[in-house]
Length: 143
Image (cartoon, rainbow, N blue to C red; front, side, top):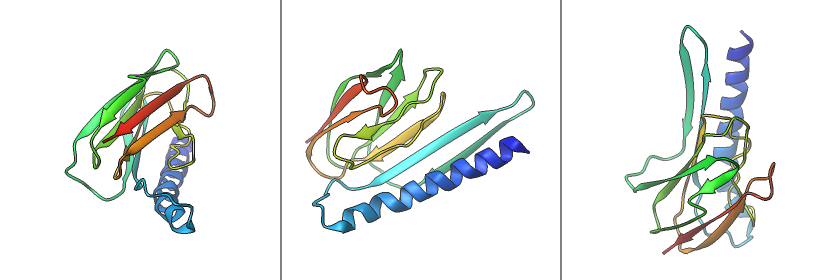
């Protein structure tokens, strides 16, 4: 029952992030990066695996992957085209965040085995870090 409650809380947090990120662009801060994000959290038991997934608008854009492992984003720098989605997968045994330096996107805590996705709709250079482990940094270059 505790796992089910935790899973429901994580789903609610993810849904709130997906709702809040697009609204952040309405504040007049000049945020034009686009905000389609997805968080997937997975909880395992010995009997079964329960997965909860929240996804913002579906898209046919290409998806590119970044692995979080050994307290590093790999690759640390990635060049993509506007409209592509980047999915980060946490392969470390501890939680990390994917936090854009100017606040354009923030995954919140991404547990071991979970993923976070963000669709980059406009060109630019987006530097990010792990808010829990600030020495972890990365960069997405959108053409």
